[in-house]
Length: 126
Image 1 (spheres, rainbow, N blue to C red):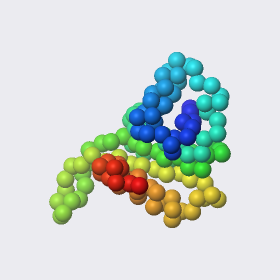
Image 2: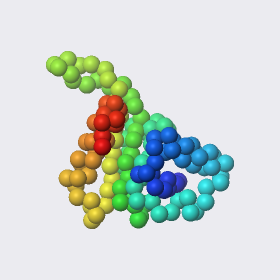
Image 3: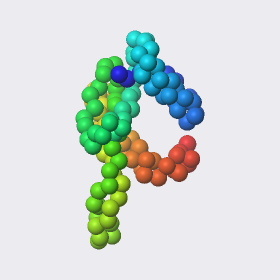
Image 4: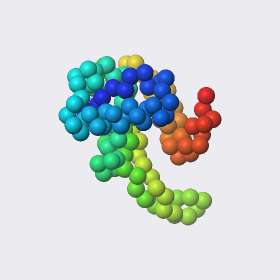
C-alpha cells in the first residue's frame, strides 16, 4: 500500500514525520481509505525495513516516479587504495521516461544519495 502524503513539499520535517506516523498507525489498524491511496505523483518506498537489499520499484500510475530505499549493510569498499568496511545502501529510482528525462532523473538520484551520505547538507539546500 502506498498512501499519499498530500502537499509534502510545503511541510517541515516534523510535519512529514507526523504524517508518516499517522499513515503507519492507520495501516496497522486497517483504517486507510481508498482516498488515502489515490492521486500520488511520486513515491518513496523503504523495503529496507523488511530486509530488502535491492529491488526495482514499479510505478503505480498516475505516479511519475518511485524512489526505493534498501537495507543498510556493511560492505567492503575500496577507499584510498585500501579495502575498508562501510555501511552501504542501494537506492533505486524508477520513473516514467515519457515525462522525466533520464539526465534529470540521474541528477536527482545523485543529489538524494549525496544528502543521505551527508545529511548536514540538508541545512544548506535552498
